[in-house]
Length: 198
Image (cartoon, rainbow, N blue to C red; front, side, top):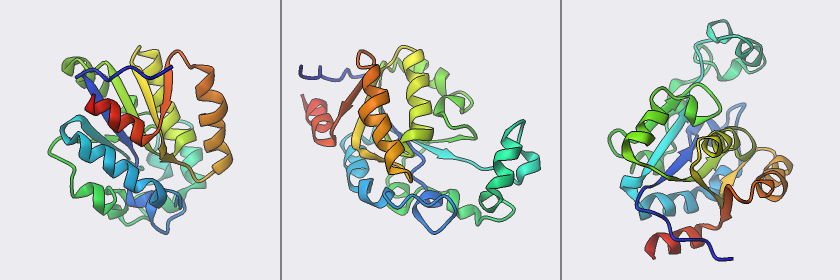
């Protein structure tokens, strides 16, 4: 069955396309470079309908909350105390096109953990969310499940998503997301662009 056209209240959410995941850090995701052209194509199709979420790390493990302390003890190399803070920036190609107010910072896997994000969507009357970025099985999927719970139409841009764990990436796109086929659609970048034009 063909996907329905998108409403005028569609938002493209780019997850964590940052230097932190693109360059030589403990969290490098090599496949980010492969999906960047498709992410860019989606961004350029609707610049005003795109926002960029950035994963913001704490100063150090002890400044994190709860069980995040354990997490950042393991990943101390990516805390602000040890990381060049410029690594938190978007990759250059996206930083060059990110408009004022289009960058959302989060300290959680899900973009819905960013202060004011859910309220921003409601205020704008958004009803459809398209997701691209990294990592498919962590921050993207956490955001997707929150979007599903909130009742949004959810689109995964399958060739504009990547993970450092290729097996986990495949599990999301081939097993977990299809289990929620009434709530999550998986479309190629080309299909999304064609629906945007219709």
